[in-house]
Amino acid sequence: MNAPAPTLIRETFPVGPLQCNCTIIGDPITKKAIVVDPGGNHELILARLEALGLKVVSIIHTHAHLDHFLASGQLKEKTGATLHLHKEDQFLWDNLEMQCQMFRVPYTPVPSPDRWLEDEEELACGCGVALHTPGHTPGSMSFWFA
Ligand SMILES: [Zn+2]
Image 1 (cartoon, rainbow, N blue to C red):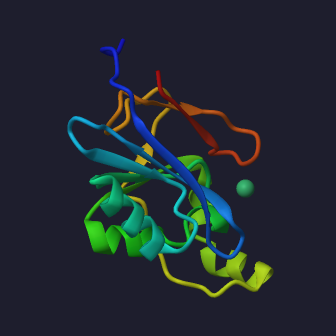
Image 2 (cartoon, protein in one colour):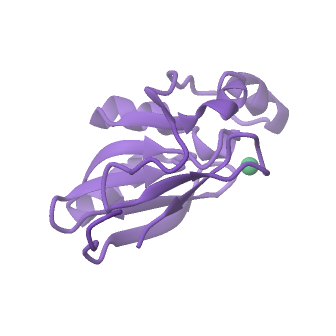
């Protein structure tokens, strides 16, 4: 299905008020990157991207609990990267303000996703594949890389 992938750059670190794991996946040749679950601290994520010499082209989400996308809007605004989510989690994305109130977390508005993730779609870099794995939420996704 996919050509053999070069060794990817991968970095995972906790972000935001609930310390969600955010992951940067980068292609060492094209320098394109995906950010997974930017749950806060957009300045930290931008600093890591810069240090790694990567340009983020898409921001993808395993699901739409607040701690996985609190910084998505800020990251999109600063980089122009697009936002992606499975459609079955739209109801959670649309209720971010209520989720923040429940957890007493400051609310930062996030724009709507640019496009819905589909099961088995190829990701923007690194020959990754999105897989619909409902359970934790109806729209939960897993991301597979060779
Ligand atoms: Zn969750």
